[in-house]
Image (cartoon, rainbow, N blue to C red; front, side, top):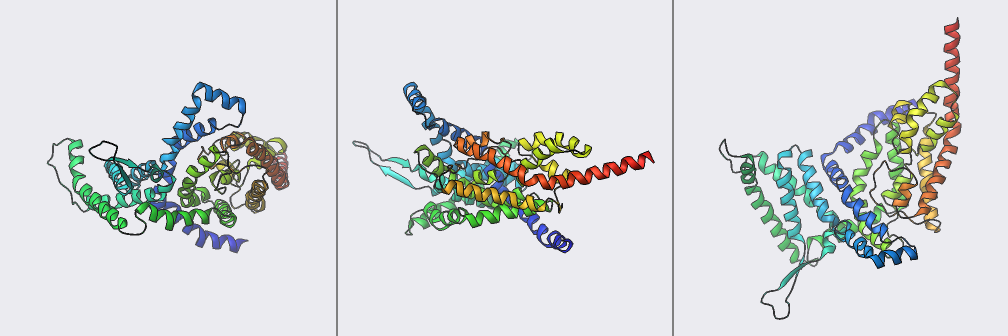
Length: 434
C-alpha cells in the first residue's frame, strides 16, 4: 500500500494536477459553467411545459402558458452554441491574463462564429432583394464544438497580436474606452478576414460549412465515445482515485467532459419535450447520481456518522458535515476526517460510486426509471430535488435508494473508525485520571 501511495503521489497526481490547471481546459470548463443561468431557465421552462398530467396540460394550454413554456427554450437551450462562444471567449481572455480584452474579445469571437454560420437567401414574392435567414440549429447543439473552438482560437490570436504590440497606440490622455476601441482595430481586421477566408474555403468542400465539418468529424464521434458505459466507468473511477490522493478529481476530469455533455442538452431536452427517451443517457445527470453527498457518494457515510456515532469526536464532527453532505459538499469529510489517504475507507470510497453507476445503468436499461435529461443544475442541489429537475420522480426515488445503499455500505467501515476513536478517548481519559 505504501509503495502504491508513493507511486501515485510522485507520478500520477502531478500529471492530474497539470491537467486540472491547463488554461485551455479551464477556459472551456469555466465558460461552460458560466451559462448555468441560461441553461437552468430553459430547462425549467421545458420541464414546466411537459409535465405529463392531462389536467395540467389542459390548464397551461387554455391559459396560454404552454406557448410561453415552449418559447423560452428556443431562445435559451436552443441557442446554446452562441452563448457558449460568449462564455468561453470572455473567460478565456481573463484566464490568459488579458482581462482588459475580455469584452472586445467576446465581440470578435461572436462575429467570427456568425461568419461561419450558413445563411439561406429566400426571395419574397414581389420583393426587390432576398431575405436572409439563419438556420438556428447551427446556433444550438449542432454548433457547440465549433463555438468552443472559436472561443479559444480568437482569444489566442487576439492576445498574440496585443502582446506583440501590433496595435494602434493612442497618446496619453485619451479616454480608456477610445483607447480600447483602437487597440481592437487591427486584431479585428485580421481575425474577421481570417474567418471569412475559412468560410470561403469550407464552401468549396463537400461539407459546405465549418459547422458541418466539425459536427461530423469531431462532435458526433466524441459524443458517441463519451456516451458509453466503459468511458463512464473510467471517468468515475479516475475522479475517485484523484480525490483519494487529495486532488479535486471532479474539477480535474469534468473540464474534459463538460463541453461534450453540453452538446447533449439540446437533443435530450427536445426528446423529453416530445415524450421520448433521451438519446444521450450518459450525461452529467447520471454522473451526479454517483456523487450524492459529494465525491464517493458519501451521503450515506455522513448519515451513518450522524445517527450511529458513539465517540465524542465523530458525534461532534457529524453535526458539521451532515448539513454539508445534504447539499453535496463533502470537502470537510474528505480533508477533515479525513477520507483522503485513509486505507480503511478506500474500498467504499472507490466502489460505492461504481455500484451506483451500474445500478442506475440497469434501471435505465430495463425502464425502471428514465435517464436523466442531463441538465447543468447547481452542484449543491440536494437529493430528491435534483431528481425532479432531471425529469422524473422516479429518479428522485432512485436517489433515496442510493442514500440507503450508501449508508449500508459505509456503515461497517465507519464503525471501525468510530471504535478506534472510542478506544483513543478511553485511553486519554485513563491518562488524565492517572
